[in-house]
Amino acid sequence: MKSIIEGFMEEVKVRNGHETEFLQAVQEVAETVIPYIITKDIYYGKNVLLRMVEPERAITFRVPWIDDTGEIRVNRGYRIQMNSAIGPYKGGLRFHPTVNMSILKFLAFEQVFKNSLTTLPMGGGKGGADFDPKGKSDNEIMRFCQSFMAELYRHIGPNTDIPAGDIGVGGREIGFLYGAYKKLRNEFTGVLTGKGMSWGGSLIRPEATGYGTVYFAESMLNTRDDSINGKTVLVSGSGNVAQYATEKATQLGAKVVTMSDSSGYIFDADGIDAEKLDFVMDLKNIKRGRIKEYIKKYPSAKFVEGKTPWNEKCDVALPCATQNELDSEDAKTLLAHGCICVSEGANMPSTHQAISDFHKAKILFAPGKASNAGGVATSGLEMSQNSLRMNWTREEVDNKLKQIMSDIHNSCIQYGKDEDGYIDYVRGANIAGFVKVADAMLAQGVV
Ligand code: NDP
Ligand code: 2IT
Image 1 (cartoon, rainbow, N blue to C red):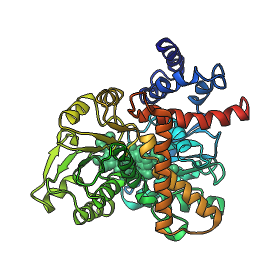
Image 2: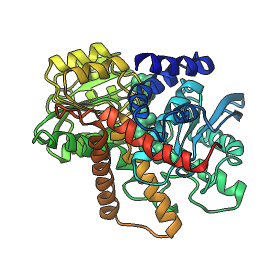
Image 3: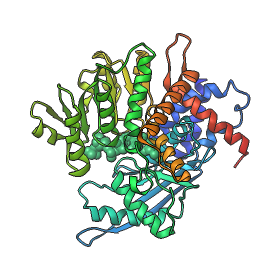
Image 4: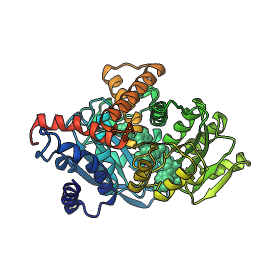
């Protein structure tokens, strides 16, 4: 078995040798899906996984724009259209200086499996640019978004590819991107999700990723007759996902004691309650400040510079910032401090070795492609509302989100339950995600 997986990875490395994040994501899938494939005649020998690791299309393009001083700047834009077997390409746009082909291919690959798990008809894609929104004026952001869309609009559409937000792309950027698309196409369609409420957005979409991550943690804890109520929780990040994970965990009776950004983390032993979270939301979303400003407002909290939150004691950890933010050393510290549950809000925040540490300790561990799927699932619900030309209530969307998260949890159990009863959510999510896409690919022939 080991040699079959190694042989497969060798072949993937020939074409993608320098793309470390992409190889990491593929390795995790290969280790769990190949042992399944070789037991199934319908998949065996069809090179389905090998076809899945090659994007259907990968576009890169020049994004020139003019900054506020009049200087001409150039960034690189991307859209990876990974797999459209079960629906149009769907996935976010990331604006961050670290964006490159490897990062976007890993995200697009994860997205294929995640979207399959949501039960909705969405293929997988991802895009973005190596543009740093930090310190840019609103006008600079607008000009960048307009230039980005001046090329992207040819490749997307409500039945072709429907982008949304990710790191560095929130409501403001989606607005500028949507305005540019509408002007270029002269069409008011559901081509992007995460739109504003007065122009086709869905209630609960901003909250959905964070809420879903906590709903998934709750489902995992329920399998051990436990719940998040009364638990101490570590959250990393302080952006969209982190904010709403904090909100929902607090609403369900947990105490969230940390949030972070790339400069460090804040620790508040009394918990980041609703009022404190309002302050964080205003600080991050409106004032676009840094998390360390929290301690000016709440001096009993501490700020730890240059560190992630994983040294603090907790019952539950919710990594909601970025890839590879939690390594094996962090995992061992969390375990030593009694952590019993990790639900990933970010994409691939735990390293391969950290996941293996969690599995060895038999704690509850959910990979992002299962636990953060609430965001794209609610994007799918936004698309449905756009097609119906209707708006559902907050309660309707939240109930559908809860149902989808529960269905994903059940799929993970279906394919991930070990003989001793332990649920390997990584294997469960990978196989469940694979089966639906593979079946569609086989039905559609070699295309
Ligand atoms: P935001 O841009 O709103 O927030 C990102 C947060 O993560 C910020 O606090 C940011 O800090 C921190 N961060 C980003 N890059 C790094 C880094 N290299 N090192 C340390 N901290 C970092 O993004 P989101 O909240 O939307 O996304 C967070 C994660 O969730 C990502 O992995 C994304 O792919 C994933 N995700 C997002 C979904 C969504 O609907 N938005 C859906 C599913 C997954 P700083 O400001 O200092 O950069
Ligand atoms: O990683 C993700 O699932 C997202 N950034 C959300 C994608 C979407 O299309 O809503």
